[in-house]
Image (cartoon, rainbow, N blue to C red; front, side):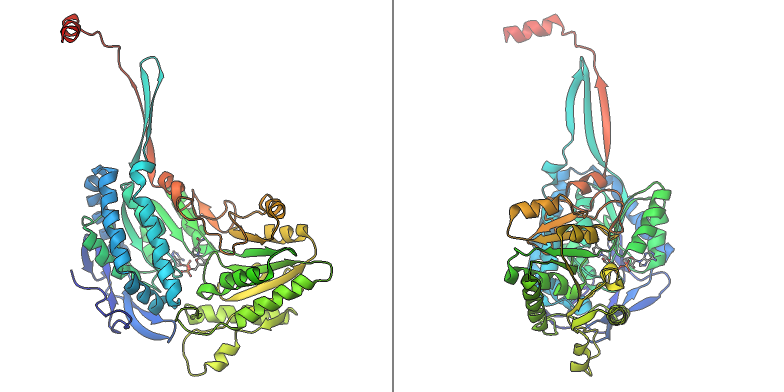
Length: 515
Ligand code: NAD
């Protein structure tokens, strides 16, 4: 197979890097011959181009997966897990190179990029345990009647992913979908396709049979064709809420299984008895890490007042001090750019609107644009806004950038009220040194992933990841990882059997007794 990214570690790939599709074990150009540019967000320079696939390409990819399905699904779970085990080792060997690609196309700093790879590989590890975890049940339910339940793969499944974790998010789906016996068509984000293109080489080295894993690149048309394809039985989607809803509605109208994770607006609630230094550190890591482009990032800090407001002041001062010390760049500890100029414009508009709403910009990330004049990357520094109105737009909507909205509240109830009235319900955390206070909040917060003294409460395997039903953070069925995913990617086949009691021939009994 042709080498996808043959640059040495740390070097930018040549500008002519062309990301094509991967179908039935072959790299192939899109039928339309159309491509989109791939842009490095740190420089705004083009670093390659990515295929714009049409329904025709999707058809070819789904057919390849459908052809591979009978033999892949008839392997034992153990045999499929063995491929994943090989792949897991290859990811570890190539982690640095994958991380460099993430830095290049997504703009994370190198530590965040390595974490992106390591976290994705944890789901691979989990999938290697599926021989133990996905066993069915068997029991005699009455007389001669036995019930058995078996997990069968669904067939061809599709996965559509966002730009913000080029490795980890595709690997929320791939390992469990594959080891449970499905074949897959992945649609990477058109903004960051290089990482998964490199991963193709690792799939090949791990020896996955042709057609088991396919990749089509592109945008909306390609996604619609995937969802609508009659042989695609289930779809996982991760991305913004409006698109998650479109995908989920369409899948359900076609009677397909779908998990569609959407956006977020996560709240951190600091109580007067929190450890100010530790809380401030955590708040900054949560809101400014990955330039705020994490669905688990904090975006609102609610500080519950003490009598004199001393803790509110101390905490806010510390947050600003720590955030202000962050430097622009993609080396360890620095903060990279946001993904593109549209994202930059959107973030700036929230800061400007907050000013108009009468909020105070306590730390202004726009200074980076002046300080870095001449740099064409999408750099905007950490920003802290103190609101006096809890209905300000920046307090309520997903910004997806390094912006923290702070609002002082006087009671625990008010903090809960603000958090619970947000339409996303993805994650929330409380900071306190009192276990009883933490339990009070954990019992009342309406969000799916809760933290106590932890600002990015991502549940790790074997726990499932996913937002809250009935909110804008999650549409569709089940969680995307953990045992929710085993359920998602399989049909439970129930077999009820009845055999007559055997009449054991006497001569056999005789022989046995005599033996
Ligand atoms: P996006 O919704 O713009 O794109 C996600 C995917 O959908 C991409 O592959 C894109 O090509 C495709 N797409 C875009 N528009 C489409 C349309 N109209 N029809 C069909 N497909 C379409 O999201 P993004 O900007 O890549 O990612 C950022 C968003 O993802 C944020 O809102 C963030 O909160 C969310 N996100 C959520 C989670 C989670 O677990 N809940 C995790 C990561 C990111």
